[in-house]
Length: 115
Length: 116
Image 1 (cartoon, each protein chain N blue to C red):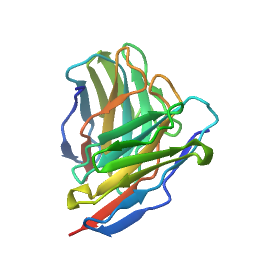
Image 2 (cartoon, each protein chain N blue to C red; image 1 turned 180 degrees about the vertical axis):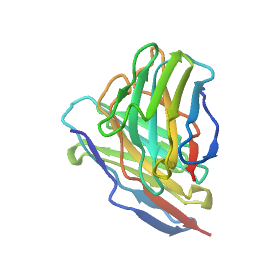
Image 3 (tube, chains in turn purple, red; image 1 turned 135 degrees about the vertical axis):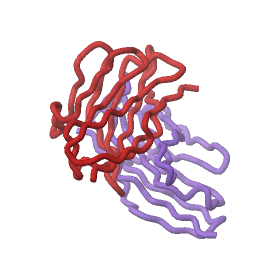
Image 4 (cartoon, rainbow over the protein chains, first blue to last red; image 1 turned 45 degrees about the vertical axis):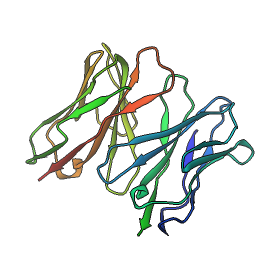
C-alpha cells in the first residue's frame, strides 16, 4: 500500500530564511509519481511539481528546489529566502497509477513565514 | 492551462437538506473526475472516482447513497450531499483528469460546506 509521511506538522521561519519541508513515501511499485502542492488560506490547491520515479534529477524553479532521493524514499522541498506569501499548507502526494488515480496525499506541513 | 471550476464556492444549509456541488472542466474534456473531502487542518481524502457515463467508484467508508455523484458529460461532474448533517461540514474539492492525459489531475478551487 502506498503512504506519504510529512513529519513536520507546522514550521515557522522568519522571512528570508531557507526552509526544507520533508516528504517520505512508501510504495511497492517501481513506477510512480510524486507531487507537491501548495494550499494557501483561500483553499485552492496550487500545483508545484510532478516527478516520475525514473527521474532523480533535482529540480530548481526560482526560489523552490526539490531533492528526490530514491534510496531514502524522500522527496524534500526547499524554499530559499522565504517570503510571507509562502505561508501556506504544503502537501506531498504520491500516485502509483499511470492514469492519475490512486492519488494519496500526505498530512501536510503548515508553513508560517513571519515578517 | 487546464482550468477546473466549482460551484458554489461556499454554501450554508440547514440540517436535513440536500446540497449539490458542480465541478466543471472549462477548457478540456475530462474522462475522469475525483472528489475529495478535507476536514479542518487535515489532508485531502479521496471520496470517489467518477468516469464519464458510468457509476462512480467510492472509497471505503464513503456512503454512496449519501454522496451521490453524477458524471453526465466530459466537462461536468456533480456531487450531491443528501440529507446533510453538521458532520458533513467540510471542504469539498474536485479534480479532473484530461482526456488522454497521463497522471495529471487539475484541481478545482473547492467548495466549503457548512451544515447548521
